[in-house]
Image (cartoon, rainbow, N blue to C red; front, side):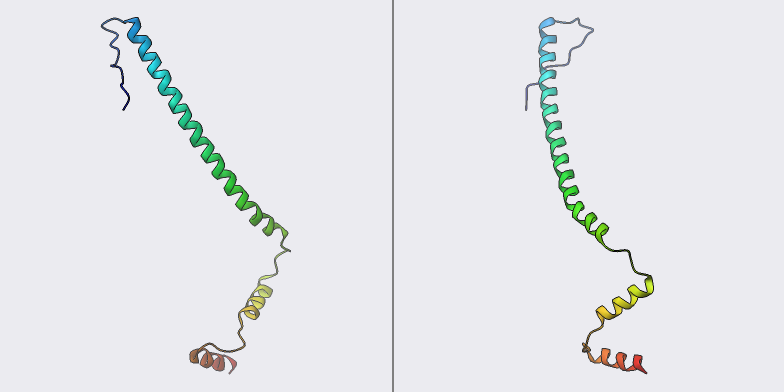
Length: 101
């Protein structure tokens, strides 16, 4: 921990030497804090750039898609895409049979 000068009590009068020491201490602390602030700002900027670089391909992909199909066509395509050629379980065989009836 750094040696911190005592607070200056202006009621006692001001010693120019103590005042100079206090100013030097505060300038040193301010320089440390500015250095920390610059590091944090750089980290934030790096993270923002990383986020934007990850978002760009997703946005470009969304823009390059053709116009969306009407809802009934999308439902039909989804049914066709998820329809399996073979049932997966006995229950699905029963459901498939009951759906066809």
